[in-house]
Amino acid sequence: MNNIPFVNKNEIFVIVFIVILGILGLFLQKNFSAGAVAQIYFDGKLEKEISLSKDCIFDIKDFEFEIKDGAIRVAKSPCRNKICVHTGFISNPAQTIACLPEKMLVKIKGKEKGIDLVVG
Image 1 (cartoon, helix red, strand yellow):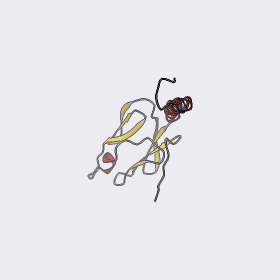
Image 2: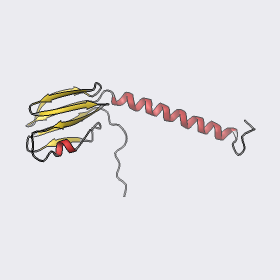
Image 3: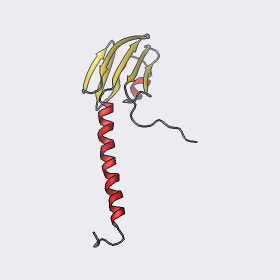
Image 4: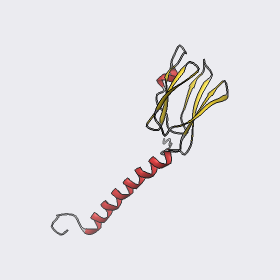
């Protein structure tokens, strides 16, 4: 340890501790998000509730949904402007996908991943 210039034992301990915390944080984040569920509503009524833990593609009415890596998106939509398709993947309970012309809404139910914060 004394052969490394400019590094003492305390600094090495701090670096190892931070690396271990980072690995632990990634592991815990993955486990907490594994229980997330997507709720798909049409005209205010719950049409389907599906786990985000398994990748798949499925259709409801004229919509095609894709679940991949713990997130969901609208892949195809019958509406003209395709805002719901352009929203992309969502995986956090703070996010939603909405298609107003077709009265469709996708919400995430589960533990939040990360921090939603506005500074300024």
